[in-house]
Picture 1 (cartoon, rainbow, N blue to C red):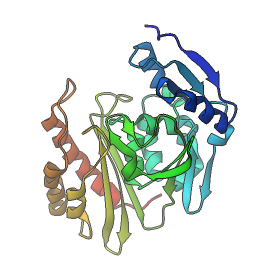
Picture 2 (cartoon, helix red, strand yellow):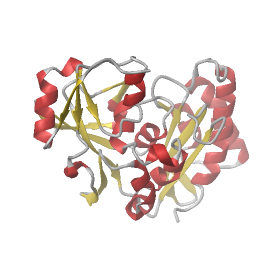
Picture 3 (tube, one colour):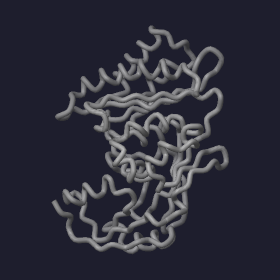
Picture 4 (cartoon, helix red, strand yellow):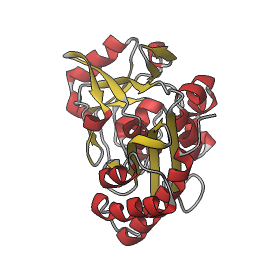
Length: 287
């Protein structure tokens, strides 16, 4: 299939990109990696009048430690992030999740910011951002602002981004020696979207773990915090009985949809299996 006709503009600076988008924000789309956008254009699920190409904005391609956070520019390619020593050292949850995203050919073009902005509920990185209590840096016609991950994902494919906004970077808290992370997902084939996935983090406190954040994906219109399961695990020994209690608590946390790929009940069962696996990962120190 072919997309509907559209105009094309290449942004020269971030300010230029914002200016271009602000002229007609409801009919303009930003082109970064294009791994989701091009597909929706070709299927005519999206028909913008203008595409603003931001790939030339070098200022959005950096990975750097700043003020206790790892700042990852929106245009960092997923494959570059996967290979980055800074990501492995300072964002180990992202490092575990990145190889699960589609295939290398997709990751060669797909961007970190594009995945967060598109906010597919079955995607890995939005759940990781939520689990880590990360932040999203946004620039727009009304200036710059930062949004916490807990407030960023609103509804299906809907975020805190306004039509005239540009996502410029994400920021992840730097891990400490007490940090623990875990990640797992179920997919029919390597590279497929997950039927269910879980990104998790916690803090080691003596012989127990605290401050759990369990972010499931593929089970709702946005990444979903399993707060009842978190409460079951927080401050307690992660023995089989306690993990089983947390798995049972998922009944109150999750209401997965049924579709052609799996029933809601099957997804809830798989979520419990993943929680048991990831709970054991959380007991292990970071490499």
